[in-house]
Image (cartoon, chains in turn orange, cyan):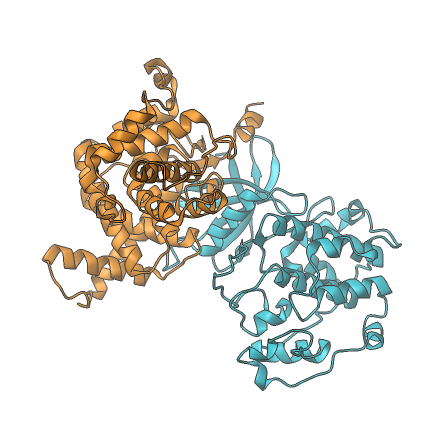
Length: 328
Length: 307
């Protein structure tokens, strides 16, 4: 053990390069991680649906899951437990609490059903199995909070991770057509599969999602029958490079894997990869958050050092003031 | 280690509190060690709420969350050191306090409550025991373990909040939706307790609390609180008349007319008519003489500490 005490300043968001650096320490096989992630997020979604959790609880669970694996080693045999632990914590954070027994029972039933291809979801769970599962779920809860540096700013609506509620607020504020908002709601769900929620706040992503939905409708109705509101980035103090990052990430997501996402089931207007390719063509040269040089990345110990959870006293702060004061 | 735990000063259901020192600055602090392993549902909601809201709130009349750290896999909240609380002062008969002192304490409490409400946070457990006093005599709201964000109109809440004696009538009726008015009621009861120096509405149990509350302040009717009779428990109630101004004057002998106005405003049965924190802070009571005492005068009270 190198230190008795360590102080870590929270960084709620990272850019893509920083995420890669962090994952280098925790994920050996990125492809395996991505495949697993899709499966787990699907299960997390099913559990949240079964427990009637609102979308914000699901969104927070998925943020937690992805955030956890920035600082903790990915081992595929444990990722289901991590996923359930993320739901438990998220239900508490979002004030939609349910008993751990209920969450774990639903999770185990789902796992058993899927594993054995059983149709009977009412099959009883062995109490001993349930107790062991609960213990393991609880053990991970605090580690998730540590991965987020106990930073509760991520739950705030204006700069937090909440996508769906932001979408509704912006939709109402800009008087966006209801059908456009509905499409936005589906895109919001698809976006949870990407790392965008680790990069940018939900409010900004929702703004861009509505802009994309609106453009899709404009494209479909050839502007004559659909009047899009003006998506003014200044109104919400949104930086152009940030909104471009979200914009192109979402377009690329659909261009690369359209059939893997929920949007393929949308039937109000016809959508395909070509729709998104067309939008990309109209948007011009791809841009986004500027890249950091390798030297800049190398100098950032935060992303290059493996988080040591064995240090006796691990302190988490939100701003530098406390650190600066102590140095003085 | 940056923090040392020197003395255990309290233990609750979900945490143990220690007095300690921040080594780099020698600052006295309190450390709340969250008992994680003992909770069958994992990390306790109170701990989550406490961190969530104290991280957001920074105000002279709200306890400061200095730091958060993990040690030996336990979550620790580092809080500012506040040696005593209002309950101890009320109970200590050797302390004589004046109307100015009461005004000062209520003013500081209301400032803290106002800061919570303007940040859309309900405290939901205001009582003298949770109004801590700093070494320089400042009152600070503490224990945010029951706090939550002001709910949206469609959200259902539990009415099982606030310590019984300080529970607002809508909570006694089991309301599933309530507002900042529940905190104002609690402050009103604390105000009454400061003037009487005994708990104002000490119900023995939840049923008795309803009786004690309405016997003292009158049973609400549909006339002053529309649809109050639609609460399921309403029909079983004994109907008491509201106290006259004169009866209140006799009960609160030392209270000025303006003090009574404020207390009545805070103890309105109808939560929609109950005064807001702003209305309370702007009340004539705080403008009339005597002026509120300088908190520095309460510094000596800080010695009435845990032992």
